Image (cartoon, rainbow, N blue to C red; front, side, top):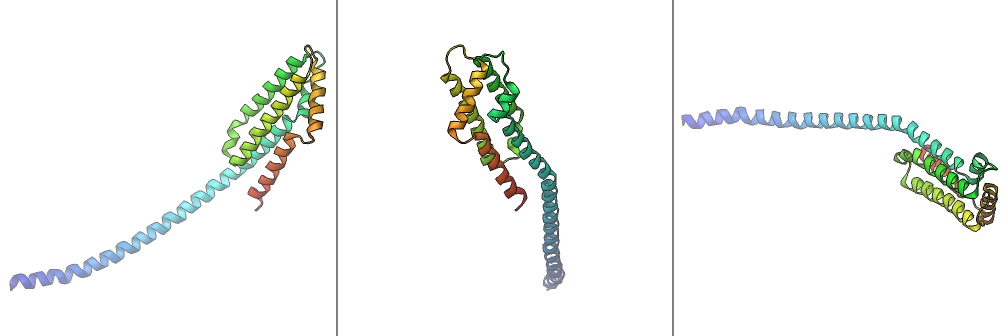
Length: 178
């Protein structure tokens, strides 16, 4: 009988203590989870506030890239009377690729679609330059290549860089002015 009364006394003390422990544990866990979620949300908000200016800058830089590789702008900067068509073609291709490589890290901050558009525009501009060169006779001058490039752009009625710029502007408005 002694054991039974001892066991009952232990159970009288242990069951309420266990109930208090379980309730305390559950409540403390809820408080800690809520606190963690609040801190996580604040952390994400802070990262978004820190990243948004960098994203904006990426759109600006890629817009500038597209403006710089616009064939008419590029030809004004690059063409000299002494250049052969081969030299000019080489310089134009090299300049476009250097500009692209210089801005390649910006893809981290752009949407995959925007980056794809930029890559396609770059390839289209290179294609126009190289196709224009192929149309020229052997020994053509840089001025002749410039004219051929501009004529091909006029024939196509759509400048690839303008398409890319329009896409970037629209996406920028969607991302930053919802």
